[in-house]
Length: 502
Ligand code: NAD
Image (tube, rainbow, N blue to C red; front, side, top):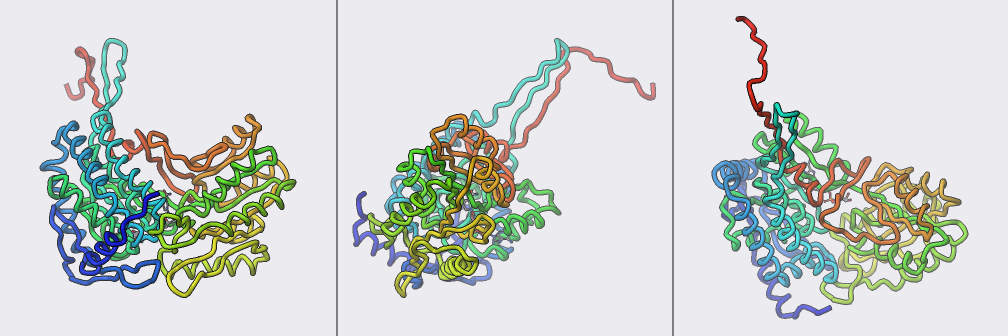
């Protein structure tokens, strides 16, 4: 992979240092109404990278007004073919600014360049993929009733969409939600996470460059309770898409209840990789190691539980440990880096706390789990050998900490896989085809990969069961959320009407 020139990185650092990042409302970059700011830290040093205006209800109010007026005045009337052209222009601009976006994301979120480059390509693809869907998204069905009636359905956009995103993969995750919302004729207010909001700012510049009409896309920065909560409770925002922790999902559900908000929650996970003794163990090893330690372990679909058949438990976990020790932890902008620093010192403490808790619970710390150096939030990729009921196997750590758990047979594997409150992803490794499908059907998870790590195809449904979420996105599924389905009924003659009061 190509490195990014140090002078280019330095120029972006200086640009950020000189900046107070503004909200983007009604096509203009604007300071917060209250003029308060907060600092963004570079996770590799914990030194200040730049500052950002801290949004409050007044800023959400201004964004909602702009988004509502752009929805009614322009965007819902814009032809689907034209929306597609805008989305394609945005995709092209993302590619054009790919290196700048990559540097910003690496500095801001601490994600390694190798992951960030793939995410930027995906961010652009989100817009071309959903741009192509713009016209088809509104397709309906017909329901003829003999020769007497015809019913048909059409889809119409919902209105102003509030999109609230987490800090782990900000650009990819936000564009994944913004693109189908815009493609189907809605306008958007994005509230990015307070720990990594900088690519949202750059995205606003890109939207301006693509000449998107003012108010169609807005960004309000700030904290969950101060800027997220007023977005959730704003009466002119009928729809909220939240990606974040399960506890935040509950809070947002309660807050949205008064307004009967349409809510789409993409939440936490504690996904199992289940490795049977008959599997291709070399491939299972590659996948299990990648799927927990990539994205710094800050990955919703991470296989943070590794269920291994008893007969191979010791040898397989020893191989995982050997690989974990060799994972290259380093600066996000070093192309060789596989794991970068955790997002924030608070998150580092949380992850280190779980390492302590795991040891206190009696799990064996096979490798890793110590902080690396004094500067930044670097931590050694960790592997525990433990039991399924332990907190380190039940709670989402969202860091590079894997818990390996032995199982006896298929029933035991399924029972352990499901004995957790989350249900996002799962991974099954076996050469027994029928067993693989039996397991896939039995596992309580929205997504199962058989003999594969998480390879995502945009048309397929993405989302979780249980405490991991409420909806599915991807392909046509996104449009079930971002559109209202209307049924229109037409009699094809003079059908009898009861004559009351005649
Ligand atoms: P978080 O829940 O703390 O924050 C997510 C977003 O919600 C942030 O923008 C935050 O400011 C906002 N928020 C917080 N409180 C709010 C409130 N009361 N009202 C409105 N908005 C509020 O999550 P995080 O720590 O940023 O991200 C990590 C979590 O995200 C993990 O649990 C991870 O599994 C989950 N995640 C899920 C998916 C998925 O697709 N299922 C993808 C990525 C991350």
